[in-house]
Structure formats: structure tokens, C-alpha cells
Image (cartoon, rainbow, N blue to C red; front, side, top):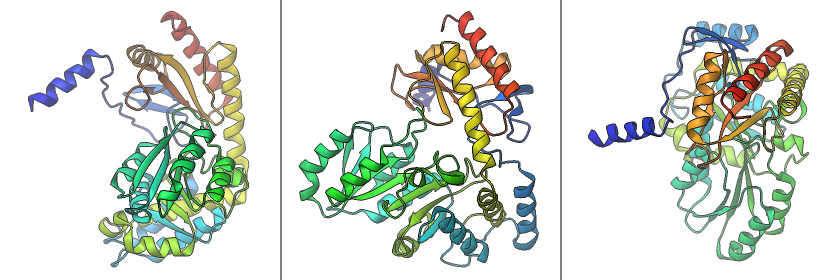
Length: 389
């Protein structure tokens, strides 16, 4: 295994090697990490649902009724009535005909993309799409093309050049891009898809629970219901539990139950998770207060960071990058912030291109203004001491 040891040593030499932090408390605005109390600005728990009493109560009830595991894949005896209820709940919330839950958002992309495309088809994917999309595309027998990030002229160029050569063409984009916080130009993508008779596929992992009415997502944000063929979402970020889903037509669901490999070859979602997720969607249907608090905190933090002179890129969502550039300096900044009581994860190559290192701030509805004020103050003074500002 010398070749792996040398690769690990190279990571250390480059200053990007990391030890996994260990959290000893629930995922909240303030956590205990590596034995130290810190302000948590690195979680996808956008709405604070991960430790919410209502979700925990429903999960415990489900454990007492169903046990801790489903016991099989959905196509054998692992399809419990609570899984069917969850599918219906998501479809209702997303205003789509049907929905189907997978074990994770990653598995959803890996399973759906290869199932709905084949040899003789073409997949056109945004250059900054998530790693799970990239892996899902690799598993497909279809040909692949990449368009420049959110560049609609480049997307149309590919469609003009290649559409007539293929049976089906599938355009894939993130709804919200996870490293920069910008939103896909979905109305233009849908317009081009209609013009060139292509299918559309949106991974809304960071849009679900964040954008649209009560967090119904990017499709709702742009009022495009019924115009996007495959809507992917996660249940582990804003929803606060675990899992992923695809929403769309009933035919889509019926087909994926026969050809979605993660569903066919992996045990279905824990019933306790399904129960907690159903409660999370019920809470979003009841009130817009969760998403409103999230966006209020997001706007507040962005304004404070700009006042201090930080480069926060072109974020349009609660995902807020603070651009550093150099990979080694990015990781050193993240470590220094942790020492001073703020946990913000450093993001470097290969997650982002070389030279585009940044820390990625993830604000939530749980943060109070005093937490954000303290965090910005620590960010500012640490950056000044390290000559980042």
C-alpha cells in the first residue's frame, strides 16, 4: 500500500490534508466540536429540523411500531405503508403527479440518470453539476456533452449541433449550485428544451426547503410546475433527515421501480426516517416561518460580510462562499477560525477548481443575530491577522 501512503503524504505536503472533526452534540447553531464550543456555519441543516422535537417524536413512534430497519428492498417486503405515505406526501408538496424516495440524494442521481437514458441518447450537463450527477452520467450508456456553467448560448450551441443525432436528449442542471450558491437559469433551460424537444432534469438538493413557497424548490421559485421532467431532491439537508427523491410523472415512478438499481439492490429507507420526513413536510405546509427566518439570517450575514470587505462571489442563496484562492491558505484559514470558535469548512480542489479555494458559510434558521455578529467579527479579525483581507 505504499502508493496510497505516498498520496496521503502529498496531501500533507500540499497543506490540504484534513482530520475528520468529531461533533459531540446535535446539529444546531452552536455545537461542541472536537471538545470545543463553536458557532456552526458548515451545516446543511438549513431549517433546523435535524434535532426538532416534532421530528424526533415521530421517529420514535415509528421505531416502536415498525422497528429500526425495513428488512428488505422495496420490491420484496421492504415497501412499508409509511414509504408509500412518504411518496404521496412529497408528490403533494412538490405539486407533481408522483414521487419516489431513494436511500440518499446521491443514490437518486446514480439510479435515475442511468435508468432513463440509454445508448443512442445524449446527456448535456452543466460544468459545475454535483459529483453525484457526474457519477450518474458516467454510469449511463448515453453520450455526454458539457456546457459552460449557466451559459445558455453554449447550451444552445450543443443542442443545435447534436440534437438531430440522438433519440432522447436530457439536459441536467443543479437547481442551486452547492459551491457558489447561484441559481440555475431554469426558465431559459426549459425554453431551450421545448424548442429542441429535449428532457429536463433538475437536482434541487440545495433548493428544496429553501427556494419557492415554503421551500417547494427551484421549480416553484420560477413557477415552472409541470414543465420539468425529473425533479431530484434531498431529504438530508433542509428536511433534516436522510434520503433523496425524484418527482415527476407516474410513468417515471413505475419505470424506476423496475430499473432504478439502488432501489432494486439496497434496503429501503428506515421507517423512523420516513416518519420524521413526513412530519417535516407537514411543518412546511403549516407555516412559512422556517424559510423566512433562514432568508432573514442569510441576508443579514451577507450584508455584514460585504461591509467587512469579504469577496462572497455571486451567491443568490444562503450558501455563501468567502473566496480565498490559494488552497493551503484556505485550509489554514479554516483551521484558525475553528481555534477561535467558528467552524467553517474549507473547500479546495477537487471539489472546486485549483486556485478557487474558499470557505463555504452555511447559515440556518437556528442562528440568532448575535451568533452571526460574533462569527463575522471572528472571521474579520482572523482574516486580517492572516493577511487575507
